[in-house]
Image (cartoon, rainbow, N blue to C red; front, side, top):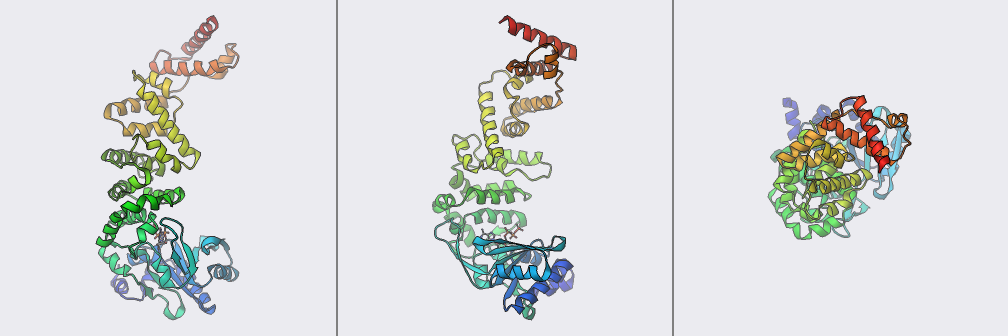
Length: 427
Ligand code: ATP
């Protein structure tokens, strides 16, 4: 950062920093919106992650705006003046405006919140910016920048988030914060890991002290909200350390009744290595917690929201059942047992296994991928057979023979099929 920008970093007016970190399109838009709000006698603010990142000298991302007034009416006004489309999200009086060239804004009415019970969604009422910042998760995310022309660029920082940014601290805003909304534990470890920060001491103590009430509080949070946080966690660079921190905070016990043990950590690291830089799949990540402990599947069922996740659980159960009863581990034998199981759950299972089993499954998967079946249903019909469930059996067995190396070419395969059907007809 240049000296000039270093200076604005320390000043309470962030105009220079805004000019430095925001795109021209964003800057022009924010100025215009601030003026429009002022004409309507409303105050408009830039808030949240963008302000935090700006103060870290990182170019801004999404534009989140708070208005002291009616966000729905204001966003409609924006669309009337600037064009573009508005989408209203009624329950929380929030709006998204999308303009030309993908310019996008989230606008919300400044509000105060109260929680009827731990973990439940909050009750809200319109209020001022300071109330709005007070409902936020951490001090570093509870800063705003004035967009009103008279005070444009002025920082609003009632919880000393800027000080915490300088000192690398994640600090909650009140002692009930984690109980009100336990998803903040997930968010907290995510920011700790992303910025290499630490929980401020009182926050760390309160995170730990949440434990007795955590199971109840988490029970009031919908699986969808947890899944949202897990997805975000898995997009960060070091989900393994975040999962371990959540274990230290007893979150997995409270959420699933399971432990993220050192073998879970190894499993998750191996999965991550296989991703080659792509984000981990959140369901595979949570599935490493207490993998195959007695209540593992039952604990994950509420999070298996889509059929893909449900199938994954079923696949793992199948693999486990079949491998437990298996006495031989030749590739052809494995194929007979596991041919229907997709690659992903097999890889997942392999990566949780000891060295021997991992080798066996790796080899099987490798050979299965290389396998080019020599027979098709069409071939069997050409041999004069009528389609029946025997087709499936014959095709599978011929694949097993191919894997074993006893069928090497089309002729062998056709001969195998003839013998198979002859034998069946004799029975
Ligand atoms: P990221 O860089 O990960 O997008 P962000 O801070 O922009 O970080 P969002 O999830 O988009 O993250 O949230 C926007 C803002 O909303 C946050 O900065 C914070 O002020 C507030 N917020 C989000 N989730 C919570 C929560 N669970 N409790 C309180 N405030 C929250």
